[in-house]
Image 1 (cartoon, rainbow, N blue to C red):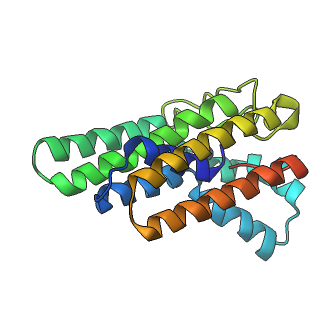
Image 2: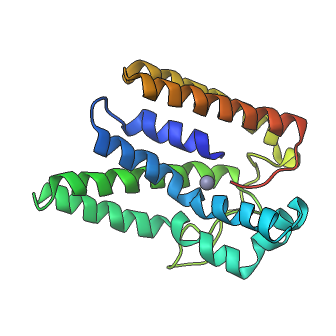
Length: 202
Ligand SMILES: [Zn+2]
C-alpha cells in the first residue's frame, strides 16, 4: 500500500483526541517500514542519476536494498518491541514511553499486515531475522497485471474513509489541514497510478 494509506489507517484505528505522545508515536510507527525507501529512492535518482526502471526493477532487488528494508518490515522485531512497550507500561516503569513504544510498534505492525496481501514479486521478508520466507501475493497494489487498478481503488476508499473518521475525531485546525494535505497527496498518488501504471514501492 502507499504510505498515506498506512498512516491514515493506523491513526483511524489507534489515535485519540488530545493524546499527542500517543498520536505521534502512531504516525511515526506507521511510516517506519517505508522510511528507508524515501531516502534511498531520491538518493539514487538525483545523486546517482539512476533511471526509474533500473531503480525499481534492478537496484531495489539487490542484496543491499533488501538488507536495508528487511528490519523495518519485520513482524518478529515489532512484536518484540510491542511486548517491551506493553511491559514498560503495564509494570508502571514508564507509563508514557511504554505506551509510545507500544503504539509505534502496533502502527508498524498494521502497516506490515496491510502490505502482506498486496505485494507480489516485491514481497518483503516479513519474518526476518527468523526466516527469509516471503509471501508472494497473487494481487498487487500497483502492478496492473495483478489487479493493481482495482486494488488501488479499494485502497483509495479505505484511505478516504479513515480521513473522514480522523477529521471528525480531531478538532484541531492543523490536524485537519494535515489530513487535507495527506488526502490530496494520497489522491495525487491514486491519479498517478491510473495515468502512469509503472511505479514502484512503497
Ligand atoms: Zn509498506
